[in-house]
Image (cartoon, rainbow, N blue to C red):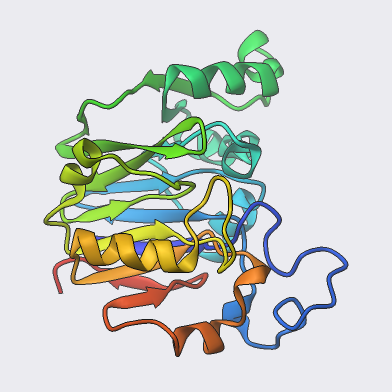
Length: 255
């Protein structure tokens, strides 16, 4: 299974528009972060998790030529705003794109993309086939997906475990039952917004502590804001087995 970070930034991305800070002015390409998303290639499947405002750019940048499934973690726009651009895959396959989301997220999609769901026969509109998911495992082809419900302040958000890999974004609390789903993963991804406390995201220290408790071989941190500090500086502070992710980082689970 190959995983590619398509984006590792928070809702504004990095650099932030108009910001003169050290991170936003950094020449290190690892400090340029599109909105958070990953591409998972497992068995014969091509799966993307979340389609934020940078979805089109991410698909082109990484030459993603096939999309078998789009998994949505939750309804916030930095994770769904690029949904319209699945039409490129529709043109190629002549089939709807399979989108897996909770009922709550689907309600937001139908509100935000009313034209997609309201007039499905209009020429050129994205074609989307919705699949309702919750906290129970489901399969795509022969691949088993285990949803992991976390809390984003008061909002339930889904992470996903695929084989020995677990991906969690936009969380500041994971209860014991849901943590049990992650245990045994060789690679875990957790969100870490910044060093200062935040109402709905893990801080750097909190994410490092959760990583220690989950015990994966490697934990990558994502959904990073410009307030975190530069990639180079923060990386020097991290314990062994915990790394800052960056856009374009790839790894193979099991190697």
